[in-house]
Length: 270
Image (cartoon, rainbow, N blue to C red):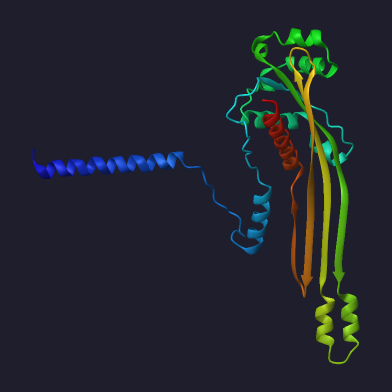
């Protein structure tokens, strides 16, 4: 065989192998997305993105994730808060959706509510009332035969417990400075200064209950409570203004509470 031809074929094969490896890396890489915002890269964008990053979803490293948990069903819990804002935004099904996701991440076999159809109402009624006969009858159907636990998550508290505001209005100081000769410019600058800061803190509490699928008896329960802070800041000097507002929203708070509760279940009851 011609040595030159052999080396050329070998080079082509190696090039194809490297190209295939590079292509494989691209396929497996996590998708990334651009930012079409006209303010991308500006100081306002950087600050807003930093705040959003602090509130973004983060997976929890559940301590017993390697151990498979009992098969379970999540039934819609109760939202017992009287807060109108919370009640408009959340219902029991929203919370149960978060719970199914996190329990699956913690390696619990979860029979999703969407697969239960009309049975979900029967299951919820049986376990909320502690009706053993109805529960046993329902759990004999299809995939429910392997279910060991029925779990529910209730919101017991959602209230704003504190609010604090402070600000500065420079018009009074500017007026005083303008009364003194030669200080008119300083008075004008001081009079243009306006600042306003406000902070509100919420307490949101969640209870979880684990019930035996065969007897409806309570296996365990727990309660978790987290603070949610929402703030706004506004400054204006000589017509130049800067403002910011944000904080963790109700969606994120509920998901974090579910994660905290699931961490409890995973670490204590597997």
